[in-house]
Length: 228
Image (cartoon, rainbow, N blue to C red; front, side, top):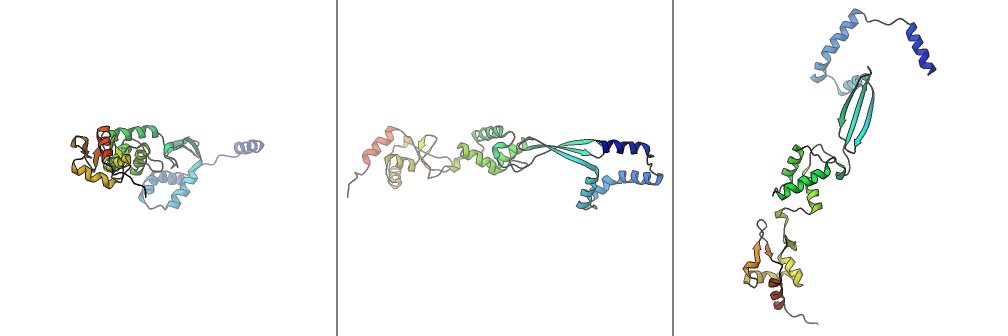
């Protein structure tokens, strides 16, 4: 504090430096030409950095949320500028508005949108973003869907046991404790009445109603197990 006071006293005693007319004109010209020069591409990145360093007194960072930084740039004049920055983060669930984004994915899925790319584009347009990107990535949408079991129609395959309450051929085989190859001939032969059967609209796999009217007659047809 004493050093500061002594420095201030010296400043008051010493005459104030004044700019010569020529130097003042040069500085005025630089101030007018610098914006155009900056955007011209003639300055190297290192030169731009050096210029900025000469103008900035300090930079203060404040983390508002995990993915939102407030950046306060204090200039040598004492004035300051506040800007926002979005740093990449590790966990998707820490993204601002993540719960709302999950709700939007569910809403679009229930509306019949079956395209991760289209969903991601819509979410980006609505202002959402992924953990490590400025927009929403399709992989983010896919992870959300899989975590909540929101599957597309074409995802339903022969390895699934059920879909929307109906059994697949593999699911029926598992219910009966038999190999799935035993089920397929019964599907085509009429052993299971047509009123209990349907096809998946996209994947075209068999869908069988899970009811006693289907299960019990098939149990009666099962081959008897013998011990060897």
